[in-house]
Image 1 (cartoon, rainbow, N blue to C red):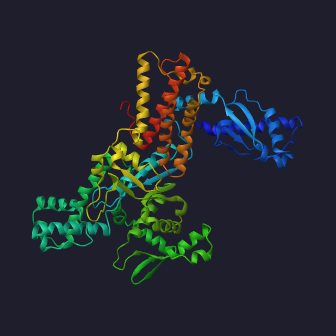
Image 2 (image 1 turned 180 degrees about the horizontal axis):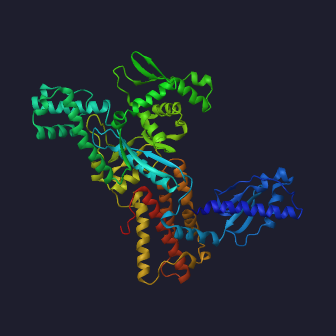
Image 3 (image 1 turned 30 degrees about the horizontal axis):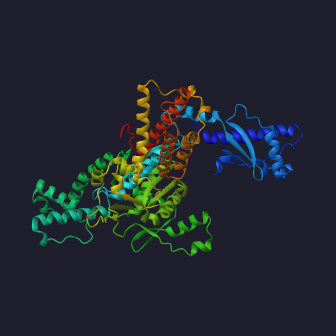
Amino acid sequence: MTNMIQGAKAQVAKLTQAAYEKAAAEGLLPAGAEVRATVEIPKDTSHGDYASSFAMAGAKALHMAPRQIAQIIVDHLELEGSYFQKVEIAGPGFLNFTLGPKWYGEVLSAVETEGDRYGSGEEGRGKRVMVEFVSANPTGPMHMGNARGGVLGDTLANVLARDGWDTWKEFYVNDAGNQIHKFAVSINARYMQLLLGEDNFPFPEEGYHGDDIRELAKAIYEAHGESWGNLPEEERLDKLAEYGLSVNIPKMREDLKKYGIVYDQWFFESELHNSGYVEKTVQMLTEKGWTYEKDGALWLNTTQLLKEKFMREGKSREQVDKLDLKDDVLRRANGFYTYFAADIAYHRNKLEVRGFDLAINIWGADHHGHVARLQAALDALGLDGSHRLVIVLMQLVNLMQDGKPVRMSKRSGKAIALHDLLDEVSVDAARYFFNSRTATSPVDFDLDLAVRQDSDNPVYYVQYAHARICSLVSRLAEEGAKVPAAAEVDASLMAAAEELALVKSLAQYPEELHLAARDYDPSRINRYLSALAGDFHRFYNACRIKGEESAVLSARLKLADTVRAVLANGLKLLGVSAPEKM
């Protein structure tokens, strides 16, 4: 797909090389020199849009002063038919190239021709990636942390798909292990309290205190009366957990769907255990010599695995020996496998059985200590977890209202549920705000700002730019001025600084999309859209459209409509609507 910025850089290199070869053929410069020049976009583009370091990079090989080389190159440049209209020498010998109408016109053509695919790349072509995100314990409602992880994972998967990857979105359901046991015990306590009275059955200190647990217990009581109270405790706990999951998991699906997130698969941890996959994975680690028994439990030699991993990555043995590394239990003395064992098995399933080239997980920052351990365990299985497993660590959300933080605690039952949040603010605002910063930065979610209908609200600011253009196009169409095809636009008429800056912003989109995919940072799209909207508003205020001479009106109308298309393109990646009226 078209990347006009990279295209311009490539053309600078090609034109410069051609000028050098022409000068060398005339005997003005030594022939056969290999000059490794850079082509950059200067911070100050008042003297040029692209700068080549050819003259300075070639000074040693060409045995000549950089400015002298630069002058010879300029004298032999052939710009006719290129993207550039002039070249100037600056500073110690930079070659500053200034873009001409051909480049600006082709930017508009690229957006028009590629439509919804504008900005797409080929980096991931032929490769499969799974993005696993949210994967919250199904023991209660979706909360604010899940809300941020949801939009980060969903948007990252969208961005990777646009950069050529074959993407898969997955939710890992932790329906086994200690959390589910604690869930069942919590429901049991509330159920037994309904039968015996709250004072006659203690609630576990570490149980889940939320009202949702009371509601589950009440529903069970209404459906089954006191009959479950007569069951053996272990059987009763199994039934309570099964019932709780049957209620909570569909609610999670519903909340996430309302939030604009639909997964390709919900993968259940219980399937790993029931199929013997966890046992087989642990057996493989044992066969490879990475486990040992102690105190009746089976341990993974995580310490040695991490030492080898860190040394491969460049740490010295002395540095590694100073680290406080610990081994991990895979199978407890009671015969039950740990969560870590199941996690290793799950990721082996991703990389080996299902054959994903890359597995990306969105995790809370409090899981940072688990990252290298899991990668090292996968290395031990020969799956190159150090490179094929990428963990994006996500900082917390600070919910604000009236300028003050809103306190949250899941264990006390005072967490802000996702469905409650979406009753207060729109899905558009929630998705935009949660993706507004890099994952490693905390997000201050201002409830008051999220519902404001003015330019201070960042999602409103971007959506308003889109709606403003739709309104403009509609009004002018009623007057007989329709958006022209790019080929009908005289790009030389776009001469105002605001016009040129706006076209350059449009050209930046493919680069931003690629960098967002490369760096696993979908918040780049938010920042890009905000900047594009700002450039449009400045253009709109500086450059009159209605009432201008026909050719100028057509060029500016086409430019505005091209901005509309790219705004809609980016908002779609974020899962945010692009309204035509506001």
